[in-house]
Image (cartoon, rainbow, N blue to C red; front, side):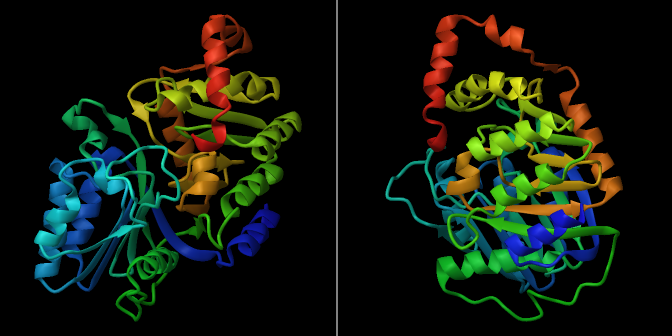
Length: 381
């Protein structure tokens, strides 16, 4: 798969970095304590970028931890998507500012409310502490991800704690977005220290968005499918690939590669669920497997190819992530990490089942017509 590494290097203009540690953190129960501990141990800088940052129990804990860092002299910058900051009222932004935390909102919206179908949103999730430890993945900051607390609408998810030279690429992405939003330049060794090797994962950050990085992720995904020889495992909460990517999946399966796609049986966006169901027959006819995972709703985004190459991060398999929003993913070359992720996928799929074409064709005609109509809005869902 060396051709894939070369392709992604040309697409992203970022180098592969050796000597990294990438640790999966399941749900907010594992991820949030690790993130809060890193914030508590920060000595010089903290950069936090997220889509949703709710003003709930865990959101207030993060706000207090960030404020405590400011009080002990740490330079703290927090970037929240403007729409994502409105998922709870009052917004966490006013609390952060009252506590002395420097916070900015990405691309202010003219509408005074949040909506899951707004475009041009910053969907990235990046935390960088002292330029040496980074966190990324698909997890927002909200109580729903704390499964042990039995929230009303629990959301399973996965995040990653990363150490090593690739964390500098996290800092590049964060400082670029901060400079775009505020015009403040963040630079120097406090943000970009020299990192020593700490692990055996070869990794690279992949930024994507409707700017100069446009089409980065679609090209990466198509390249990974073209290079697959044995297996492809994809886990995503929203599966609405456009025609080129759908064709690449079908061609990969027709070449004899075992392609399995994992999606939630019960999603959190009704229109998206209907549109997804409309295209499953085509996916199955192309030779792919579709496995639906049981409740609670799973927001995880994972891709593993041939047990060697993995892609994790914030992007879904839909036009909103791949064309309209700003996303951040991490490419990882490591057989042990891939094996760990495959075990996580298997555990998440336990209790689910694989769809078959007969099951889909036996659904009521009214439901299939409804799904087809929803699918017409696929570019905007």
